[in-house]
Image: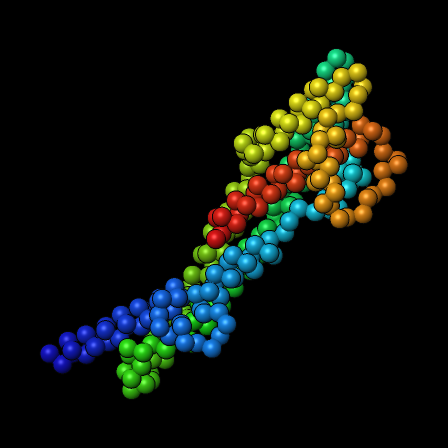
Length: 275
C-alpha cells in the first residue's frame, strides 16, 4: 500500500509539472502574467517563429543576379550542351524573327538559379529550430510550478531529475525536427514547380506581352506600371549594360522577374511549413 501511494504521489507531481509547463508555454498560466520580462515564455517562442525567422529568411535580391551573371550561366550551359550534342533551338533566350516573335527561357539556367536561392533558406530554418529549443529550455527555469512548489523543494533530487528528463526530451527532439526541416527544403530543391498557379500567371503575362510585340515595337511588359514600380522599388545601383544587346537585356529582365516571383512563392511556402 505504501508503494502504491508513493507511485501515486510521484505521478501527481509529474502530471502537475506537465500542466504548469505547458500552460506557461501557451501563456495561460497565472505565473506567466506576473513575470518581469517584457514578453512571456510563449510570446518569446512566437517572436522567434513569426518575427525573427521571417526576418532572417533571405529575400530575393536582384543585384545578386546581374544581367552579366545570368548571361554567363547561359553561356556555360550552352557550352556544356554543345559537347553533349544537344540542340540549342528551344533552350536559350533568343528572339525568333517573324510575325510572332517569342522568348524562350533557358529552363536549366532558371532551375539552377532557383535552387541556389532555395538552399539559402536552410540555415535560417535550422536556426529557428535552435531558437525555439532555447526558449523551451528557458521556460523550464521561469515556470513557478505553484501547485507543486512545496513538493519540489521538499524533494530536491526528484525535482532535479525531472528537470534533467525534460532537458533530455527537448534535446532528443531537436535533430528529428531539423531533419524534418531539411526534408522540406529538399522537396523544394528536388522539384521546381513551374506549374504553380501564381508562377504560371506571371509567365503567361510575359508570354502575352511578348506575343503582342510585333513589328519590332517595344514589348508592353517594359511599359507596364507594375514592372516600373517594381524596378523603382529596387534600391540597388544600376549595372553597366552597355556591352549587352537589347535582346540580352530583355531576356535577363524576364529571368530576373520570374526568378523573383518563384523564390517569393517558395519563401512563403517554407514560412508556412516551418511555422
